Image 1 (tube, rainbow, N blue to C red):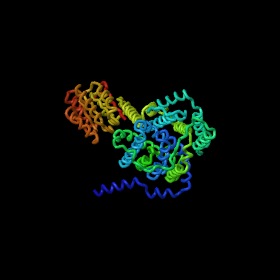
Image 2 (image 1 turned 90 degrees about the vertical axis):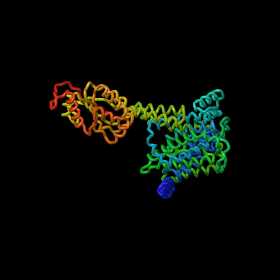
Image 3 (image 1 turned 45 degrees about the vertical axis):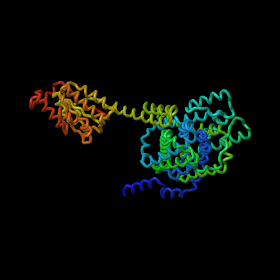
Image 4 (image 1 turned 120 degrees about the vertical axis):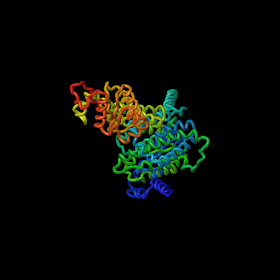
Length: 578
């Protein structure tokens, strides 16, 4: 009992901030403060825009950036991760808001936070490395398309149409714009997007997003453009923490959306932390601590009216590029946004919705790495198929389902590739470990097969077909020492092949069965079958001697008779399955 408690305390301690984390925050505070200020300037329009897109309003986006950003900075597993509302999460939240309202979104965020903490306790962070690159690229491409489509109503200056599917909502917005064009809103959105995209190529370090938003706001105010709606009133500060949104009766219906939100938060946050690792030298994130930090952030964010949060790849990249040295920069970003909430809410409330739509349109365009997509599509047909299907599923379904579909397709194609390598090849007589004996076997009605690599469900059927079509010989020797792994399906197929050969009057001998294979072979009855109808031997020479003895007993070979090399050869073959 004492050891269990000791391990539990040690596990909890490993998830909490360490002295090294706190010491790192004091090494170069000037660079961290400057980086945090820059990230806050970049994050402000994104937080406002994603809050509006989620349905809860701009104030929800700001609350998320402040509360979740601060907690994830302190408790997360990366020194450079910047957390807050993201486009990917917004895509998931829109249908939840449509079905359950604001209280449903807040409840889902709280439940997802608890799930993330549980995943951290279970050490689930390490499994992120198993997500294939084509799935990630397709996922990102799909998200970018969805974010862009979500901005169409605000970019066109029309009321948000009803509907859960983004394609349907975007089409209805286009129909409304065709009936009542709002060129001022469209021009505002396109101008902001153009400034961001062109400016990023010209001066990547300059925060053109905030400059474009300020210019658009001033232009709309001075020119008095009608039809360009502002964000609206924002509270001057964060609301008091509250659990009033919880409805115990709705928890059952919100459990599945919460699982989707938790899965997305884990996936995107660990991806973002990995990107930060790749941009730095000698710094690696702790995946379990990152899940723990994101869990705490998502538990706290709904209490202040915020939406679920994740690590934000774009903001994290800006943080690293502007010279961040520790998690102090991420914490500074949250503090700066909090100051803006308290001191500049009236000014922020006058930002046009079309300008925020332009920011998010540009963000969606910049998410798409054309070079990476082109390279992935050219790599193999399988990679191209996985990427395309994941992107289409992201657009047509939801993000978690898209990732699951992509993983299933990747796994199926990988198994197919392994299974197709299994084949039965004839080996020249001058090859092999026992060339003298194998030459002699040509006249003795004996054929030997060597099985290389794994014998498992994906390759088992092919193995059965090829082994069952052995020529009319008297003895088959299965050389099994090179089987790397075997599952129950492989063992059952092996048993079926042996039975079919036995029914044709062919004796089957096995050699070199490894200790790790004996349990699965014994469980399906292969060893019993071999012992009753043939034999099992430690080495191939022993099996060859047993085969010769059988032929002598059957009268097909006289004792001591030398084999006649002029007799027709049956050949020695090897089954490769690697």
